[in-house]
Length: 222
Image 1: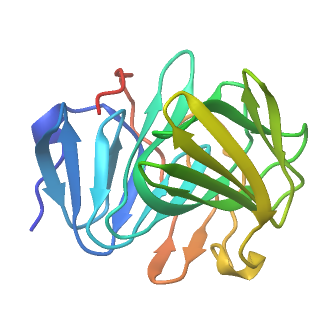
Image 2: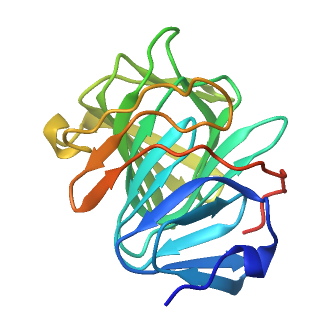
């Protein structure tokens, strides 16, 4: 079954590609507006739910999203935001910028690397009570917060616990590095709107890079 996303939320609103193993549901303002079961454009700012694993590829971020996870990616003139409502995913962050934002029910913070450190690989697990962020390969992942920077080194995991307005942080060892996107690689895009090099991901077919179509920016709509 294939229902083209553009039929539900309009053409030219996508910012990358999504490759589902089964089906992907798209939500706008809390209402399901589309579903599809093959490669399709990734909508800008709309909530995505993967029934099984799915892979997402943009010019700055590659994700391997686990079954049942809900997320969105929003790009506009001021930010590039990865929002994770629930679930877990592995990420490759290519050419990080100061306006890259990670948002979950627990945190909202820029997440960048030290200068010259591209292709960070790690994993993020999100629930309504905690957010765990690991860095498996790369020099250092930095989350800028009002109370100071949180620096995550390779092989480490930062866990943020949500309790009302209070957020506590613990740094522990991460899962083994070979568990993340084994055999994968992603090169920075040559220009905005162009995907990177080939990405190979276990349980997901190899993805050949494709040029992104023209896009119209839209606000985040959970």
